[in-house]
Length: 261
Image (cartoon, rainbow, N blue to C red; front, side):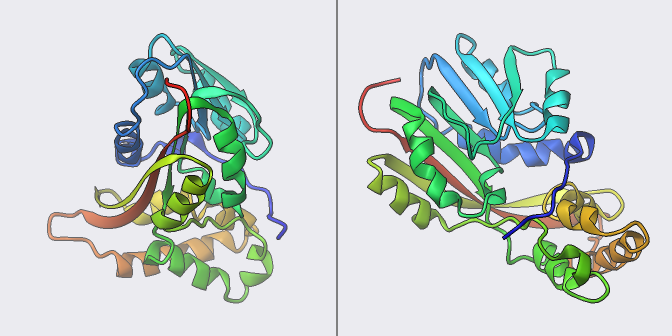
């Protein structure tokens, strides 16, 4: 299906950066590489998490790739030892001892078909590790989908990018068939958020952004107001003024057969 183009806002994405970064840290903790020479982050975003790769493996050549020029521009402003480049992981063909992808594959329809190429990009004995959201049946996504399908919005939101992912066992089966040793699991985080309409702030930087950008200027405020109202009802403010956002994520760490890294 044709997807309408959209762009990313690095500063908005960095809202709740600590909460967004927790899955990356948990993913990285299960990667057993001791002294890789080359490390690649596919979908590096603004680079705040890619920098952790350079900190863990200071002797490695670390590269961050992202298809968003805005994200790469923000990443290049960082004073770290990472090389950042604009690239689309769907066509990227490289070689690295560790390949990491954090909250990126869900934006690529049919991304299971990309796994053979990603495995082939890892040196024998190296590691492929990725994390994707698995919360697409939660109100934070379903409410956007329902509202976007209503008039007068539906005429503008048809064809927008919509994220999706699979259960851990699906990734395990595919990667095992490719000769990898696989560790796959899921975790539901309870993000305790504060601020005005925090769930809207969260989703408007990620999953809902393509939908919001597809709307014309005269309809977007009306859509946002109704979306905020529905989200506020689904995620009520607690007595201490915070809102809890349950967020399921799927993790996969695969050791590619042969060799050591």
